[in-house]
Image 1 (cartoon, rainbow, N blue to C red):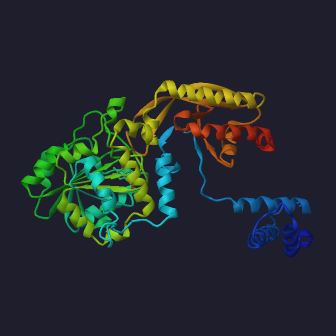
Image 2: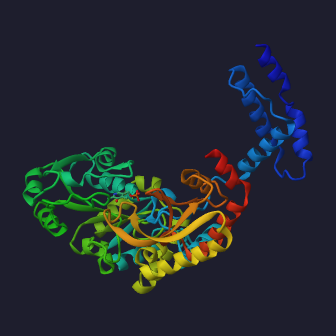
Image 3: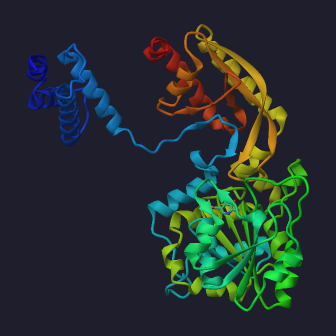
Length: 476
Ligand SMILES: *Cc1c(COP(=O)(O)O)cnc(C)c1O
């Protein structure tokens, strides 16, 4: 108890600390921040002392001050940060899925910094529809009669089911009841929409007669879901879109396909497994097709709904549409990305997601060499650097089992454990996210943009030159 009192008495005075920090010219922070940091840190220490958890030795005033300064600096740093993606996962949901080209990014600046014709018809001078800005382009690219865009593909599935199948039965193959990213489950979305799930077939095989038998007077919709993040291999069979459409027409039912990734380009020409394109599914006659904006399309987060005019019109009238509507940033960047698709060779070049997926191994190796040679100049004493072959992933639940041969820069810090190194790189001003694989730290250069290389080299050089690198050593 006596010890506690001594420690409590030794705590610095809040007002004194605040005054010192305010007079310190190296501290540039609003006084509200200084105040809350000091108050909070001292309160925390007081609590620790009372709980008997405090360290025996007291902090010196200098230590307190540097602790405050560190906390203030942290508080002034935005939480949202750009990072260097060295994981080789192109559509990395946790790192923001698709990134946008400079041109598309410029459209975001325009949309944010100026008034726009978001919902204003410049010809009539009257109110316009925000969707009209992209609908014709989507229809032209996909061959669909009509289109609508909502917040994401989960929202697209929700509003489509809510419109077309509320309190009615939806027939789905058991093999397609997927969960995506742990947060999107077709059965759960269906329940929220008020549709009743009617599973048919076995996990590995579903036949047309399974759908046929399930149809009754309460059936509204036949649904196919693209099993994008897993694959059942071996003895399998699924009913094709064309067969499903035929059956639906015979029974006066509507058809829907959740394509998930929804590519507008057949990537099998680049050695990827064949996946249906949006155009192919539309052409097969499916009434409603939904897909993400930020997966293989390479655009902003969005859920694109395309299909028959009457069906899309009904979805547009659903009051949920107002709740799920996209904002001007999504609209402007989506239009910009979609316009790239008018020239497919330019799309492959200008849409970063597509460019990263189709870049040649030769160019990747050259990029890896360039990073290695620049790093060698400054890191020679701290880190061994090598270039190694590795395997990238498409990610985003797209083309699941597909690995793509790639090249990585292998960094082996000489005075630090790999796990510590990996953690320290996540703390940099621009965090570097790599991959530890077989006890190696790898930066897969497929997902490192050429325009990031200079920053990457500077970040690593500064890191090894700083005391953090030594701190890492003592932590280990
Ligand atoms: C990714 C995916 C979704 C969810 O799309 P979001 O745009 O992330 O909402 C839904 N269905 C399928 C098949 C998917 O692959």
